[in-house]
Length: 125
Image 1 (cartoon, rainbow, N blue to C red):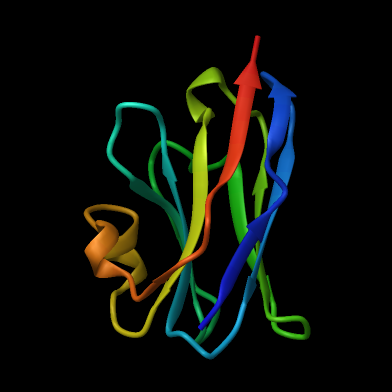
Image 2: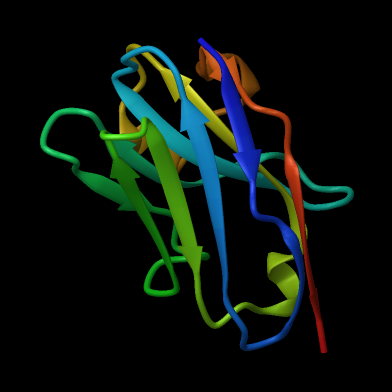
Protein backbone atom coordinates (compact mmCIF):
# COMPACT_ATOMS: atom_id res chain seq x y z
CA UNK A 1 0.00 0.00 0.00
CA UNK A 2 1.35 3.40 -0.93
CA UNK A 3 0.08 6.76 0.20
CA UNK A 4 1.06 10.12 -1.20
CA UNK A 5 -0.30 13.30 0.33
CA UNK A 6 -0.20 16.69 -1.35
CA UNK A 7 -1.78 20.12 -1.23
CA UNK A 8 -0.19 21.69 1.81
CA UNK A 9 1.02 25.26 1.84
CA UNK A 10 0.69 28.64 3.52
CA UNK A 11 -2.63 30.38 3.98
CA UNK A 12 -4.00 33.24 6.02
CA UNK A 13 -6.35 32.62 8.90
CA UNK A 14 -9.90 32.24 7.66
CA UNK A 15 -8.76 30.80 4.35
CA UNK A 16 -9.11 27.34 2.83
CA UNK A 17 -6.90 24.56 1.56
CA UNK A 18 -7.59 21.13 0.13
CA UNK A 19 -5.30 18.20 0.78
CA UNK A 20 -5.24 15.11 -1.40
CA UNK A 21 -3.94 11.63 -0.77
CA UNK A 22 -3.61 8.94 -3.42
CA UNK A 23 -4.32 5.55 -1.86
CA UNK A 24 -3.48 2.14 -3.27
CA UNK A 25 -5.10 -1.06 -2.05
CA UNK A 26 -8.53 -1.38 -0.41
CA UNK A 27 -8.18 -0.39 3.24
CA UNK A 28 -11.12 -0.51 5.65
CA UNK A 29 -10.67 3.10 6.70
CA UNK A 30 -8.79 6.12 5.39
CA UNK A 31 -7.90 8.99 7.66
CA UNK A 32 -6.11 12.28 8.15
CA UNK A 33 -3.89 12.97 11.14
CA UNK A 34 -1.89 16.03 12.00
CA UNK A 35 1.03 16.83 14.26
CA UNK A 36 1.84 20.32 15.42
CA UNK A 37 5.31 21.17 16.75
CA UNK A 38 5.73 19.83 20.27
CA UNK A 39 2.40 18.02 20.24
CA UNK A 40 1.25 14.44 19.75
CA UNK A 41 -0.09 13.26 16.43
CA UNK A 42 -3.89 13.40 16.46
CA UNK A 43 -6.52 11.87 14.23
CA UNK A 44 -8.80 14.55 12.86
CA UNK A 45 -10.91 13.01 10.10
CA UNK A 46 -11.76 9.52 8.96
CA UNK A 47 -13.88 7.88 6.28
CA UNK A 48 -14.85 4.24 5.99
CA UNK A 49 -14.80 2.31 2.74
CA UNK A 50 -18.21 0.80 3.48
CA UNK A 51 -20.96 3.42 3.32
CA UNK A 52 -18.44 6.31 3.43
CA UNK A 53 -19.27 7.07 7.04
CA UNK A 54 -17.26 10.04 8.26
CA UNK A 55 -15.96 11.03 11.68
CA UNK A 56 -14.22 14.20 12.86
CA UNK A 57 -12.38 15.31 15.94
CA UNK A 58 -13.96 18.10 17.93
CA UNK A 59 -11.10 20.42 16.95
CA UNK A 60 -12.06 20.40 13.26
CA UNK A 61 -15.74 19.44 13.22
CA UNK A 62 -17.75 21.81 11.06
CA UNK A 63 -14.66 23.26 9.35
CA UNK A 64 -12.92 20.27 7.76
CA UNK A 65 -14.52 17.74 5.45
CA UNK A 66 -13.13 14.39 4.34
CA UNK A 67 -14.24 12.77 1.10
CA UNK A 68 -13.12 10.06 -1.26
CA UNK A 69 -13.11 9.50 -4.99
CA UNK A 70 -12.91 5.82 -5.80
CA UNK A 71 -12.47 6.49 -9.51
CA UNK A 72 -8.95 7.74 -8.86
CA UNK A 73 -8.31 6.14 -5.43
CA UNK A 74 -7.95 9.47 -3.72
CA UNK A 75 -9.13 10.93 -0.45
CA UNK A 76 -9.43 14.64 0.19
CA UNK A 77 -9.48 16.91 3.18
CA UNK A 78 -11.22 20.21 2.53
CA UNK A 79 -10.12 22.64 5.23
CA UNK A 80 -12.17 25.81 5.63
CA UNK A 81 -12.07 28.65 8.18
CA UNK A 82 -8.48 27.80 8.99
CA UNK A 83 -7.12 28.94 12.32
CA UNK A 84 -3.59 29.59 13.55
CA UNK A 85 -3.80 26.43 15.63
CA UNK A 86 -4.36 24.35 12.50
CA UNK A 87 -0.69 24.83 11.63
CA UNK A 88 0.79 21.33 11.53
CA UNK A 89 2.13 18.60 9.36
CA UNK A 90 -0.79 16.61 7.95
CA UNK A 91 -0.61 12.89 7.24
CA UNK A 92 -2.93 10.46 5.51
CA UNK A 93 -3.13 6.95 6.87
CA UNK A 94 -5.06 3.74 6.30
CA UNK A 95 -5.92 0.67 8.33
CA UNK A 96 -7.69 -2.64 7.89
CA UNK A 97 -9.31 -2.93 11.30
CA UNK A 98 -9.32 0.23 13.41
CA UNK A 99 -12.66 2.00 13.59
CA UNK A 100 -13.06 5.63 12.58
CA UNK A 101 -14.40 6.39 16.04
CA UNK A 102 -11.06 5.29 17.51
CA UNK A 103 -9.11 7.25 14.90
CA UNK A 104 -10.58 10.62 15.89
CA UNK A 105 -10.36 10.01 19.62
CA UNK A 106 -7.45 7.90 20.81
CA UNK A 107 -5.58 6.42 17.84
CA UNK A 108 -1.80 6.67 17.74
CA UNK A 109 0.86 5.93 15.16
CA UNK A 110 0.81 2.21 15.94
CA UNK A 111 -2.94 1.89 15.35
CA UNK A 112 -2.64 2.47 11.60
CA UNK A 113 -1.21 0.11 8.99
CA UNK A 114 0.21 2.62 6.54
CA UNK A 115 1.24 6.25 6.55
CA UNK A 116 2.02 8.74 3.85
CA UNK A 117 4.70 11.37 4.13
CA UNK A 118 3.29 14.49 5.68
CA UNK A 119 2.44 17.73 3.98
CA UNK A 120 2.94 20.99 5.86
CA UNK A 121 0.11 23.44 6.42
CA UNK A 122 1.00 26.86 7.81
CA UNK A 123 -1.73 29.28 8.85
CA UNK A 124 -0.69 32.87 9.46
CA UNK A 125 -2.47 35.95 10.78
